[in-house]
Length: 355
Image 1 (cartoon, helix red, strand yellow):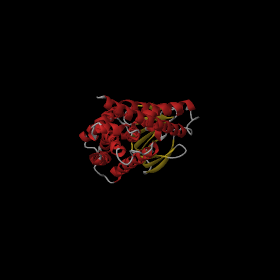
Image 2 (cartoon, rainbow, N blue to C red):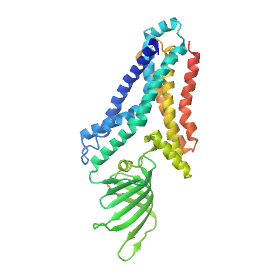
Image 3 (tube, helix red, strand yellow):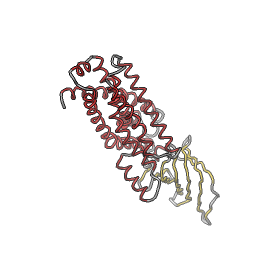
Image 4 (cartoon, one colour):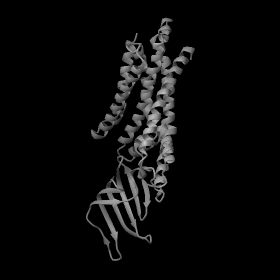
């Protein structure tokens, strides 16, 4: 890299880090405030809530990097334009494409940071945060591995096959033991939804209850189950696809396809991770036509507002596509790449028109 390349890269990276620091402080504050209702439950203290917040910051940084890359690039390149540094650079014969190449180097560095966060740091730290919180709150509940999630709560042993939503699980089995550890009943629910006051609503529930004389099997129906186990605790072993790294997602996709099962949720999550990572490069490049055009002499507040609006629009589009993929049964790969494709198209068109 030349001196000019290093200067542009350093300016962009520094501005992105500054914006990221502000967002992480705000995000960490919101996470800590959200933990206040749980402080005092079991051994979960304010210090535990602070530790939970810190462990979740890498996940926050991973999710925010595409937006902060756009905002930071606008601020960094905008400061160069406002100080007439870009004017001097271009007056010496440096083309817009040459400046875009230097910005692309910064984008590739940020992509490397995103991969480090999303594949190495964030998933295990996020999992550790959930475990630390769950075991602090429920110190009288045991947890074991196996198929899905296995949890013991007093005389109940609960197993769930998979998590279908933030508070919904499917394939829940309930084993009820007597005081002398004899099996009293076995139940199975097709669906389970976590309710208020430590209750679960079980749907399509069937049960076999054992007595000394016979086995009683009531007709299928609904049941309200009282248990200290929460949806967050069961989610420890039944992770959402969005929380898995690429290696785990690929493994699950191959397993689902090999067994003729639907892998669309995992396929969408994997494609979305790739698309979000690639979007960082175009987020950085998008700043160049803006600062060379109408925002050349604008202040930092205006550039921050423009970056925030563009970032929120990209975020909302991604969330809308997330919902559409599930509701309308659309192609997960194409939809996952749609926001990045739109961003790339707009960026390349604006770069081609930049003077």
